[in-house]
Amino acid sequence: MIEVKNVEKSFGDAKVLKGITTTFETGKTNLIIGQSGSGKTVLLKSLLGIHTPDKGTIAFDGRIYTELSDADKRELRTEIGMVFQGSALFDSMSVEENVVFPLRMFTTKTASEIKKRVDFVIHRVDLKQANHKKPSELSGGMQKRVAIARAIVNNPKYLFCDEPNSGLDPKTAILIDNLIHEITVEYNITTVVNTHDMNSVMEIGEKIIFLKQGILAWEGNKKDIFKTDNEAITDFVYSSNLFKKIRKAQNKEE
Image 1: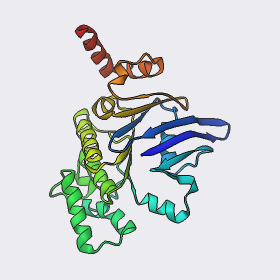
Image 2: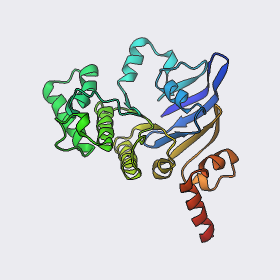
Image 3: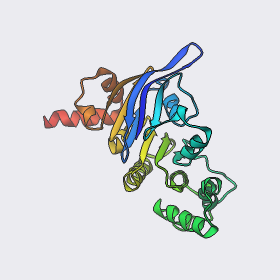
Image 4: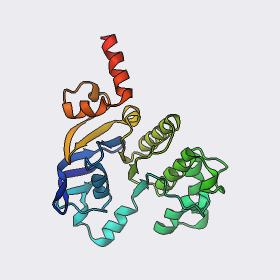
């Protein structure tokens, strides 16, 4: 579990995060949603330790990040997996070489142990026989699978995904959503997904926080969205054609 308490972050005179308090639960897909400029990317970078909050704390299973020693921070980073928006694969490396990269950086496993682990996660994300292909030989969805394999190769406790469906067609996006959710449950990971994709909200939104102008304006799950009277979240989600169709169908049933 990741606990965020009264986190504030400013850049110059612009206050971006205004006292965010929430929890990201273990074994669930936790989504951060909001309009551009709402603060969701700054919050994600604060969780990753890229930004240091001006006030408040972020704790990983009771470990407050800013209170850790440099050695403990390095140890914590080995427990984190990251899926970047553009996959961020090394073009000159094969699938296998991309996935093996974190193991060589952060572990002392033997060559045979590394090979076994890499083969396992590549198989887990359904990329059989792709070990020696280059990213340029793969579709966008396959590249995202490689990014997920690399993110989980170290058995992370925490998985962060920044717009994992960016640039993907709707069908492939759903497959990636489902893969992220399956891995989260299977390995009991605390997964945090930064997204603007309303399809993701309906597919895997087990815990959702909605930011508006740096404030946590609403939190709940994908079912709660249809029951809430909170205008901030309803105005945001019902601007999506998907939600309009669902809402219309619900009204007919009622």
